Image 1 (cartoon, rainbow, N blue to C red):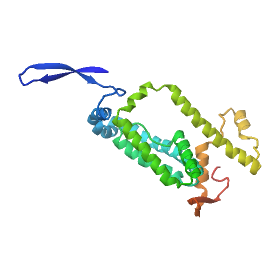
Image 2 (cartoon, rainbow, N blue to C red; image 1 turned 45 degrees about the horizontal axis):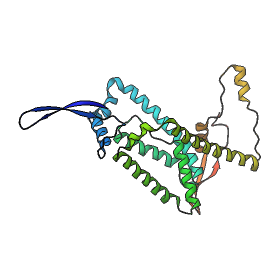
Image 3 (cartoon, one colour; image 1 turned 60 degrees about the vertical axis):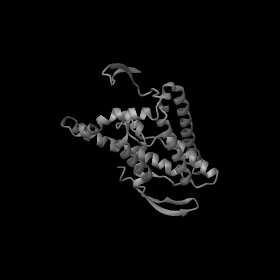
Length: 267
């Protein structure tokens, strides 16, 4: 914590110099929403330039290329995670909902956040968390969407309390061990979810893995190996799928009715 000098002038005309504390981002201020107010005070003078700097001649080309890159970078995981949401929540969430969430959250965050360079989007921990919430709602026999709404509202309340009482300062005491434990749990959930459909497909559909003919061809030609790419493959299937909205006991769900399986689009 650094100290700056504050100057006080009394009615008698005497001038007193007193040290003024300059709090860091992970310091307790001892004031209600003190850290939040300090963040606003630091960022407010730069707010206008945050919008105008992108259009300066020396930054314009880089900003445009970054916009095009971020469009693809944000759209690809939204489609991937949206497909996983569609399967894990039985149609309650899907690709369109994930794209809308990324868009709306990005607009709000880029306008009001303290760090506009952070990009919001789908993430593995929130996917696993949402699937756990859905399974819990099914287990206790309650409707998922109201249950999910109140879960998010309580999370928002706790986030506000963290900001008001400067609890972000506790992050300086958190070690990598806490993050690794959480990451290990998420990895285990994804491994189980990924292995389950493979086992079901092999036992029910009796699928067999054919030899990968492309690998020896690439090896003979001295080229890098090309394998199945997740995001383009999922996008390709979605673009060739026809859906029909059906009324199921758990609510409306888009059910795939037809997939144009052919080789022309891949070729």
